Length: 215
Image (tube, rainbow, N blue to C red; front, side):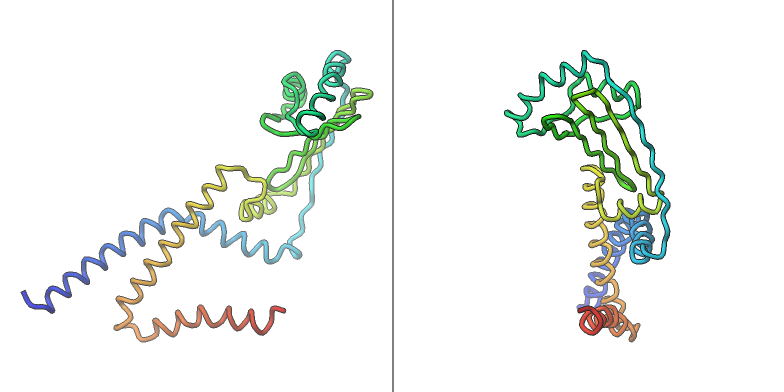
């Protein structure tokens, strides 16, 4: 077997392997790439895209027995947990029963006269406040629409651990997709003279824009 034949077989093997890694990684990150590309555009034009927040405000009064129970718990929370603790099981059940709001795992701020729970979410915000003095409880939720929701997914804002893991996996797949694409370009560059000038433009243009127009 000649050296040329061996080199051709080795080249064919690596080219096939690179193509396999390239298409698998591209399949994994395809939908994510579309999502992040679209939301990159919407984030870049956030000032021109109008959003009309939709606000929901609820108000009620808890029963005296529950309020008295919370007042007894308040000193212990302030002294032992520095004023931060989840809502009591009874209050969580009240909120879920009356307003269908799940507060499991959320830590609230317990002060002398109230309990305040922040409930941030992608595409909006929410909060819950209970006045320990008179038992009045309020809930407010703001929804800024689907564009804001998708923008927050792009930024990983208030999205939780599962979405954070997805972003990490997507980033790894995108890196594999890009690096294998670079090696495939290298292997075909001999027959495509514009390959490296185009790759160079992809580097030079953003560098020049950053140096000349970003201060």
